[in-house]
Length: 538
Ligand code: ADP
Image (tube, rainbow, N blue to C red; front, side, top):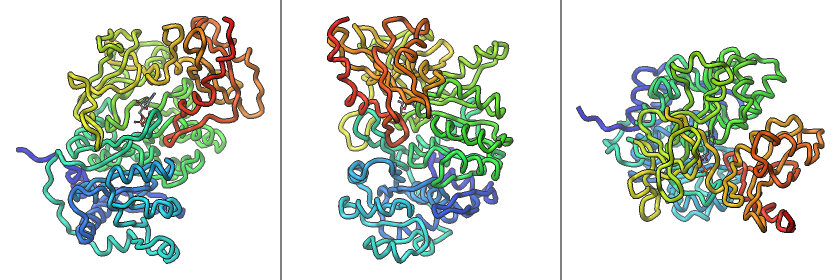
């Protein structure tokens, strides 16, 4: 039997077999709303029907600028299963970038949370194709007075039919659209087919993958505006998991309240979120009793974090890697049977890496000329990936994004061991090339992060008259601490080769962060990239 792999089939399953499982959603205005999969499905059907009523065509881009909440979840399914494209937009980008992205995508509808009304006011009129602006709430006369032609989500739903049938779709049609966060260049659009989303749902949720099941209460802290919240909304529907959607408040204490109050068993997010959570757990004295697992990814994991969760709270921390172009799950770190008897430290060292590919994706390493690099756990090369949910090209860009033999080059520099355990060494654009030899900024940062008087640090390549580039460490001291340069540099002794020790440490109050919380090394290089050019001797 051939049935198309569609987003509609995921929400149909949740509606048929898990209708009564609740969805907990923190409202933008505060307070908790409780709904369930049956109601989410009914609302998704109403929304698809209402969009028909507005004359929004098949394949149209319906953008969202919204927190993780139940209306956003309804839109994911109502738009995608209804034959249109859910185009999530990251509100932390600048208004210029957002206007560019909406225009580039050809967005016709924009759903937004009240938080972002001031942003939408600035956008109105700048995106010519945008025909419908929809506030994700009930009627609000003040907002209506400020934004011309504003519609209201709850009123729109009321006009839709809850018995609406999904249109028949080909699994190769697009269901979602995300833009890369632009850490290393201009944002680029990645379209996800229904098929890619469903295969990512099945592949990413295998037992050695996310392994989410109906008995779980899952809290995606990773935003629904960032690579489909790592696919969690789709996976949760496929297995009927209970969802906790944390809304706008992502500070540690709000998350602790939700974890304890709603008995969250699995939470997912970027390292900075978990730093905040660890501090809040300590402050509140919560033991996060129900939290069995957290999944962390998006940027490198601070070395002490796995141990902190394991030893203080009995929570297993699973490191994962992915990117917008890979829907996003590419690797997850779970141990194998043969690792059972390894000493604790050796296990911890293995788990620090980004993990192995699940069925559905393959990884390989290539050097800068395209020649194979051995998978020996030592040799670093450009990480390339192919698989059922890897993008072949970017929206609106001519030509594909693949190598001649059909692999996607991630722009990451990594090692792979014979079992397929991958460790990111750097992003190709961030690596430091000193006198023809490469230095990994991640390695320098991990060593700095262990210094008790530093809060965080970033290593960058600074131009150098003799060596082309040399490492410079931009360091943020812990509150109340005033470490000096020599003391910071002394921790590198014996840990890296002498020629890899940074030439200089520059202390700053904070590091510049991009829209997804990653350090903007481009900005650091612009600011400090010439700081060594005055040094002529050496
Ligand atoms: P952008 O490329 O604009 O940062 P993405 O969100 O697609 O946007 O980021 C993907 C990149 O994030 C990866 O190529 C990799 O460099 C980095 N990344 C993702 N997960 C991890 C991880 N667990 N450890 C280190 N780097 C990671």
